[in-house]
Image 1 (cartoon, helix red, strand yellow):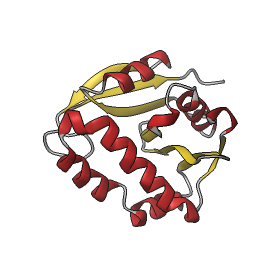
Image 2 (cartoon, one colour):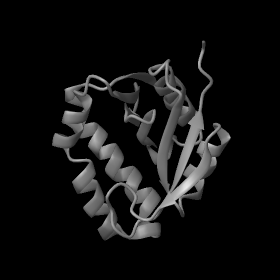
Image 3 (cartoon, helix red, strand yellow):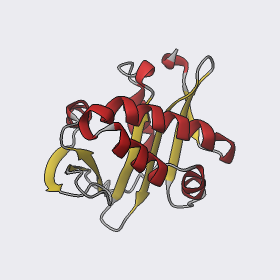
Image 4 (cartoon, one colour):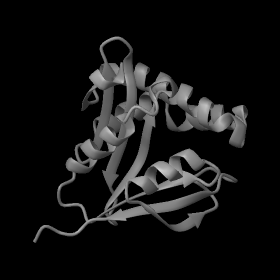
Length: 168
């Protein structure tokens, strides 16, 4: 299924499917770590269709979806420049499509969209071992810790980054 996924820029008509992917993936990943109530609160706050629509329209950001012919949208990544490089806000693959290389494809495509970037950084919840391991396999290292991932009180996260050599 996911080997045939096409990675493309997100469109306005993708917002309901992207939200559905994020809600499903967040519950699968975080219910046991932070509880389903907190997951619902965060996904309602961070992943509403209105917020996603504003993000897909950001001209300096990269909003990608991975779409499989037989399964619809199975992956999503969103990143934007933030003055310190590029902040990778989201990279999620539907649970049934994980482990097939789609996350690596999304990360690679996203990185190519920012050819002059010196650094990509992100936050990953401290108990999300699978995500931390994924990023470490792709050259990221832990550079710090925050006690409030995003703006969520009580959700600690590692700060991870990957630096790139300039081409010049």
